[in-house]
Amino acid sequence: MNIQDFAAEDEQFVRQYVYDDASVVAVDLGDGFDAGSVDIVGDTVIVVGRGDEQYELDAPGVSQAFIRNGVLTIEMEVDA
Picture 1 (spheres, rainbow, N blue to C red):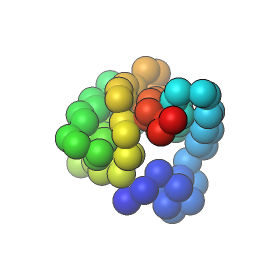
Picture 2 (picture 1 turned 120 degrees about the vertical axis):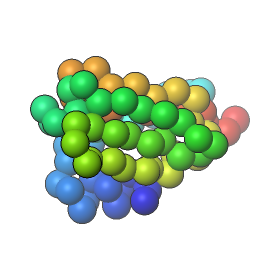
Picture 3 (picture 1 turned 135 degrees about the horizontal axis):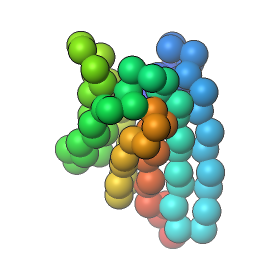
C-alpha cells in the first residue's frame, strides 16, 4: 500500500515536507502505536502496533523511519 492510499483509507492525519535532499512524511497513528515498532525492508516500511495492527507501506528511497508518541515519521531520499 502506498502512503497516500493508507492516509485516505484510514483517514489518518498526514503531512509531507519536501526539502532539497529529502522528503519527510509524518503520520499520526494514534494511541495504538505509541509503543509500536518500525522495520525497513528494501523500499517497504513495516509498522506494527499493539495487538494485530500492522501496515506495510511502499516508500521508495526510504532512509529511516521511526515512531515517537504515536507519530510515524518516514524520511526518503530525493533524486537530485
